[in-house]
Amino acid sequence: MEKKIRKICCIGAGYVGGPSMAVIADRCPYLDINVIDKNIERIAKWNSTNLEELPIYEPGLKEVIKRVRNRNLFFSNDLEKNIAEADMIFISVNTPTKSRGIGAGQASDLKWIESCARLIGEHSIGSSIIVEKSTIPVKTAQTIKSILDSYSFKKTLDNEKIKSFSILSNPEFLAEGTAISDLENPDRVLIGGEDEMAINTLKEIYLNWIKGSKIITTDLWSSELSKLIANAFLAQRISSINSITPLCELTGANINDVAIAIGMDSRIGKYFLNSGPGFGGSCFKKDILNLVYICNHYGLIEVADYWEKVIDINNWQQKRLTRIIVEKLFGTISEKKLAILGFAFKANTNDIRESPAIRICKDLLEEGCYLNIFDPKVNELQIKEELGVNDKDRLPETNRGSWVFTSSITQAVNGADAIVVLTDWSEFNNLNFENFSKIMRSPSWVFDTRNVVNVKAAKLYGFKVWKLGDGSTN
Ligand code: NAD
Ligand code: UGA
Image (cartoon, rainbow, N blue to C red; front, side):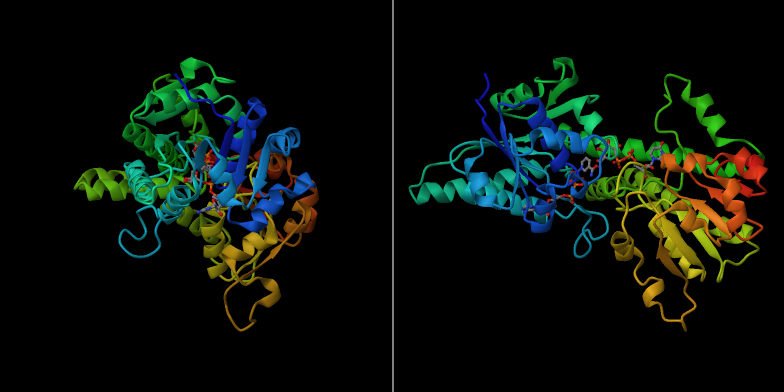
């Protein structure tokens, strides 16, 4: 048995809420879906008639939005009305790492989750299915339930209609840059819960486009925990391959060949073995930190230490890259110009949260160099929020370097001593080294941290090349 659902509301119009609801709306035209957010500017961008102004960039997103927006998908700041009318409410708000207080630097800050539970308790009418889509620590469903139960109890005392809630965990596994295809064709959909009718109701929605064999159901706690563990395992693979890159550089081996050789073992598998400047994005670090916090909480110190190492290696890789750049450029980059190609944490997104480019650029600036930064989708304001003072407002008496935002690769490269590739945008596969050799200072260097540069072409035009994990370029 399942419940008839007509209206869905999703709290949080971010990287998950926006695309995931757009795909549900696309595949289920019979549903009315309202994505709500307290951020007025964000909602205005989702409603912009110019689809280039959507608040997030994802390949394929514009096309889906064009089909469904104002048909059966709506974006609004009216939290109360949309919560009151909904039969099913998704919670898709941010769950960042706590910055102060108990658990600071590790535990997830659940204040946004709690405020959602209170909003729902206050405004929801009748029975509702509450779906946790945000990534949260195991046992969060219990917190949400306690808050909702207290509101129901209060309403009973006030002789109001009693509300009933079922809580489901339905973690999202999409990756940015491939969000739409991940949502349209996921490896699996995971639903955790106790109430069979609620589980079947959510399952029925996904069955509109996903095979039943891909929809797995479990208890709440296994579902919540699986999400953290999936991210921890993915991040662990990146730290594992990155930890081997210096060994390749020192021994003359090549990390890509090693990755191919080990990946052909079907037990290891070929995916997620690309070495790079370290993983970024809003989730891997925060979710592992959260796992570490939970392990410590339960006294599992060795387990916590084990997972913390995944983050240590990630930080070490980022620091290591700056050291190499300085060493290669005759031990100093003070007043040298570097072209930074790519600022997003990965290709095909405008997201810079936890991007390795942030740490690396900050370290380079500490060395007193000038950075010309180019990224096809990231804007100047985003970079300014992370790097702060740029060329225009730099105090000349400080020894710290400065940066400028450039709107083309050629502009970034003009007059530079080195090109540093930090994001795997396909635009960087065919750099015009012939032209660059004429406009850069020599000796001109290319530092490729993403294995995207055509080394042969660069060398042909006299470039010195350093490629991550490639012993032949060291
Ligand atoms: P986000 O920061 O892009 O969006 C969250 C939105 O929630 C913001 O716009 C914020 O204004 C809104 N919000 C917060 N509290 C609110 C409230 N009380 N009422 C109304 N609006 C509120 O975050 P995101 O990247 O979409 O991530 C959301 C969750 O999904 C996180 O838990 C994250 O770990 C998880 N997740 C993210 C990804 C990803 O690729 N970004 C993938 C899988 C899971
Ligand atoms: C990741 C997971 O892949 C998603 O399944 C999960 O839903 C999501 O986190 C989340 O919970 O937020 P995302 O961070 O968007 O998705 O992107 P990934 O493709 O996983 O890349 C993360 C980082 O790892 C990027 O900086 C990327 O460049 C890096 N990476 C990835 C590598 O360095 N090597 C690889 O082989 C793969």
